[in-house]
Image 1: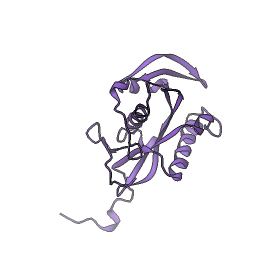
Image 2: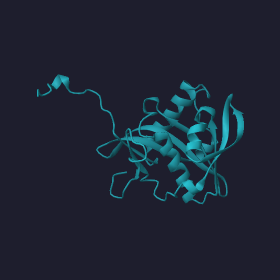
Image 3: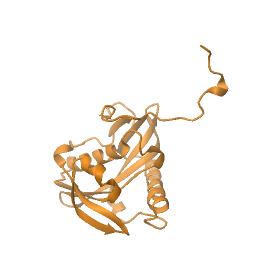
Length: 196
């Protein structure tokens, strides 16, 4: 067997591990907002310039990050959650970078953490307006559809999570680790001692 020469070594890095957690660093929040602008303003054209609103002032921001040597390196997914009234929570602005939409179940893991965090904080119901093309994914994740609404010119399903299928997550700063190409087998809580 011949050894590879230096010129034949791969030149791009493909992450195999992702951390899905509550945003805890300023750079994570900046990259999450930049990703939201790229998805909702540029790619989908739903908003002009910026998608931020008053909800961002009270919302908790979650991120999915690529990991290098166990450390978060780049934000490739995000969602926000907030309590609209006592025990009534909402999730919104779920976005995953186009290059990572079919890697490691990042969207599903962001949803799992979002509902688990709200559940741990006393949620009795968790709502979301889900873009029409994403309704089947949410239904597979134990969400119920309660009708459709047109918001900002796009059809959305009004949906609720079945909280019985979402364990409360009390350590969102650690979140979950998922592996590229994994289904459920690679999804596990991050353990204490792993760098956040």
